[in-house]
Amino acid sequence: MIPRYSRPEMVAIWSPESKFRIWYEIEAHACDAMADLGVIPRENAEAVWKAKDVEFDVARIDEIEAVTKHDVIAFLTHLAEHVGSEEARFVHQGMTSSDVLDTCLNVQLTRAADLLIADLEGLLAALKRRAIEHKNTVRIGRSHGIHAEPTTMGLTFARFYAEMDRNLSRMRDARAEIATGAISGAVGTFANVDPAVEEHVCDKLGLVPEPISTQVIPRDRHAAFFATLGVIASSIENIAIEIRHMQRTEVLEGAEFFSMGQKGSSAMPHKKNPVLTENLTGLARMVRAAVIPAMENVALWHERDISHSSVERMIGPDATITLDFALARLTGVIDKMLIFPENMLENMNKFPGLVMSQRVLLALTQAGVSREDAYAMVQRNALKVWEHRTDFKEELLADADVTAALSPAEIEEKFDLGYHTKHVDTIFARVFGE
Image (cartoon, rainbow, N blue to C red):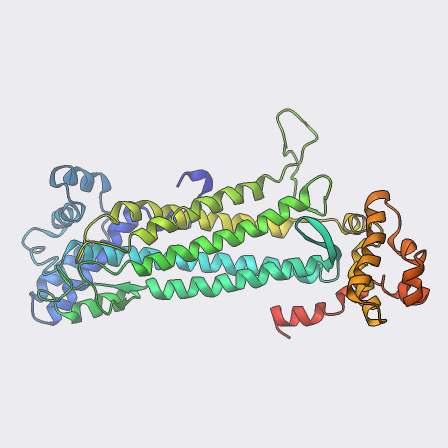
């Protein structure tokens, strides 16, 4: 992923240096386990640890790979250069390349998941703070982009909090599912490497042994992991779209923070564009782009082919780095987001009283009017407000059919905003707990 959309801690997980360090740890721990079993001499296992402080030379490994055309062999050759050929002759005993590659990938994905979990927790804290801050800030709810009934800005934030809280659970589950390792040999039968070696290596790396592998760890695990990233990305876009709509000039109920010296347009100095949330929409597309290839990686030939390999070399870093950046960016947007309560009320009253139409409809039916007649009575008055910007309550008071069923006081009572916010506390308790 390009530096523009990257953060150093996540990038470091996917660096060649980190990868080779994990490969080394897998091989060294495997040697320890084999020495414990008496498969290799203890002194050879101990000799491998001479390289524990070595900074592996990426350029040198690449140079060897240019000849061997095999990355794991190139690494093992370079390791022997540090440990000594005789001392390193038992390294990789009974193992196959996928034992190293797949176990390493899952270590990287679990570490990436830990960062993403922390990102989600930070975002949740920001959403909760803004939800509580604007718990009773009334705004109009919209369906199909059209005014519906009143809600609050706090409920909007709470809705996004609940969605991201579900995503946090999904991410934790995805981490647990991907945290497996395999040191099971050429086709997963442990013919040349004892299962105790796998158990030891996994324990040292914070993984659990894959119950049954072939030459690879089953890719349905990875498909589920990347699918989770895709769902989280879609939730990011869901929030970003709402903020973008709120920042539209004719709406302006909320907006991204506009910093001193920031420019919105090279041509129009007045512009304040929602560039961060537009960027998040684009980044969400890139994360989701990893999902289908991950799904297609599940079907491999027999015990293994490498059709998944090139895919994972790209989507592993790109999807996790992009999502990490996107979550951090969204947290910043929520933290600094500007809210305009006065504009919310002004927008809600653009067609005075119209948003209370359902209350009047229900009152008429409760007063004995058939639903069909009640709907027609309310709608004809509502359409006058749409067409002439008159006051809905005044139109109702002037309608003889309506006043025959409802008194002026009963009509007046149906325009109380508090009616629509009376259960906000109940919803907040459901979302955030008592």
